[in-house]
Image (cartoon, rainbow, N blue to C red; front, side, top):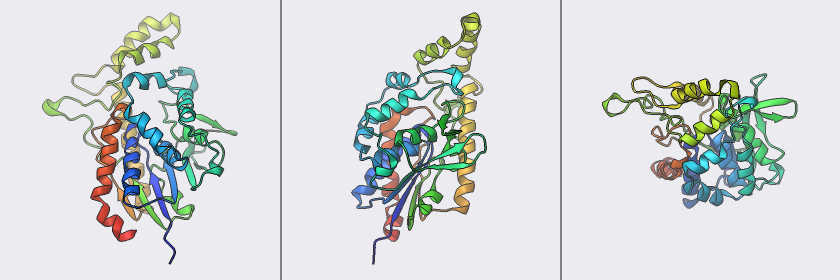
Length: 307
């Protein structure tokens, strides 16, 4: 009998998405090679690296990433519909050679995005892979929308955070899904002594704040700088502005994920324990990758039953 076609659905989750690298490494070491790979938001980045055979390059970059390098990638631009324009991210993908036309990839690939006007779910399956990824990661309020033909596209996590349905539509017989949102609720603002935990924005270095303020018109820069400083600094007794934004995104993605997966359950669900990693803490890649590997190891009995 022919081996069943394995689909891998990599979910959204911003910095927690580095764990997808550990998941794929562990699966391949166990002899489980996905035939179809689909990704939403950060999952699209890792999926694209995998189907272009650049996963090792992405892993090396991620494990060496520091806050200074993260800030260098944040091309601040308040006029584009988000805090960050995203051009530097596209340049990074091209520098890592993740820039192949999707049609030429050896494995079927799709990135999920959302049509900003209609709310429709969009599957990006042709054209430059880096452009598809850029659209899929356009988190509202953070990264500006991506133009695609006559439409503006934003983050696919708004409609399909874990693209199980896409894998099935592309011909997968067995779907392995990675949900990065299963461990994020109820832990963001609790710590020893009752002190709030920042989801990753307030921990940003001063350089990010300076670059943000530089985008403000001179006439209101002094007043805006005072306001921006208060927004970004951690609050002693209550969550700050960006903490509320980050956790609201977490709530949204958690609720949508639960709803979609209830109607479209995968054969195997992998849920890395990543509640301690904030939305923008991309410098914690080693922790996330290690947890991705551990999640696969813990789920190996279920994987063996299906595959």
